[in-house]
Length: 393
Ligand code: G
Ligand code: MN
Image (cartoon, rainbow, N blue to C red; front, side, top):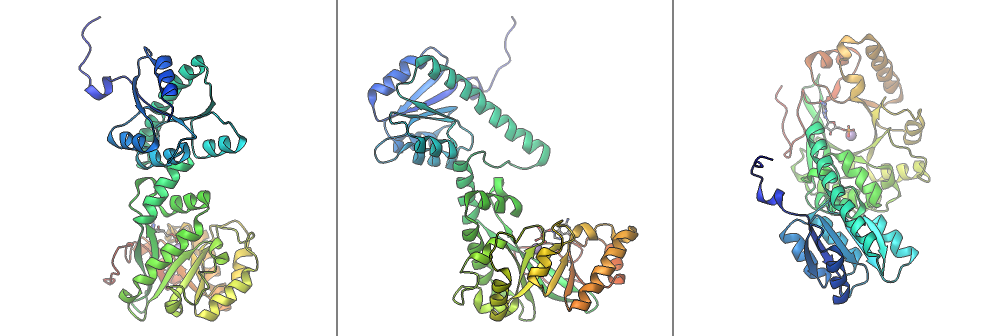
């Protein structure tokens, strides 16, 4: 064979494996079993040292004890996911129980092994895990190449780490909603944004919160951000903010001492038609409470849901926001024109203000005006932006 092309030193290195156990005999056993298998072996006697090593350099595999003093294996797994979303973590226990097994797997342990671990099994799991780590990295690359997204964390511990980062760095972008005939901004929609690459879109962020059972916390944080920026909003403009159906069950939304409550009469709460209100008890009562505090209610993405008019009927909204699917190319689609015209006229009959979303072109704007929709939102008038911007007509 001829000479190999020069490789980057890091790529040429053997897989790095970190062994974590508070029992030196166990560490010695692992080293013996995995010696001469082409791994570079590192070890730590506790979770704190393991965490430091993980921060310093990447590993291809971690094999960790579950029951350790100070920082147990699950806590270590969570710490690892703060810095590495992919590295497989094999958890080992001397006290197997159904509960710890479920917990370990739920948090993203790659495998759950019980002591004493058979040498052949340990070797096989280690070799397989190292390949899986490469696969996870390749998948992430593929997703980035195909969709430009960073891909979200595969397991619960990783998702938690991403979610924490996203929550800490969350901010609101504001997009104007205009009355075209009056050339006036009637309000702004507040849209959640994050700096976290794996949870970059609001949909991913909400999905993560749903999976982690942290929707209420997310809702409070976003409403708090809006409340804090109310002073920058012109007095005559309303703020539209998306709420999740689950938020209705959160006492904070209807609490008179919540930060947003002070500005309730300037706030429109948007509830998407895509979500189901079925699981929420007594929606009309919640809505009535919110109205009495001064909030208005909007139904969002109207025309995109397929849940019939259930959500609409139960909310009795003040505002209906037509989904951008109806708006896109409405100027060249007579069916869409007809649908928009009849929806707009029905809403007028019910005293509901119609807002059309996602208006991008002059053609769409004019077709919507002709169909009776004067209140519009979309890139044509302004993109969501960090500061509250005026519209140049
Ligand atoms: O479902 P909801 O209306 O809350 O979502 C609004 C989303 O649509 C925001 O994320 C916003 O960035 C995006 N958006 C706003 N205006 C436009 C537009 O004119 N075109 C497109 N494609 N997206 C838009
Ligand atoms: Mn919305």
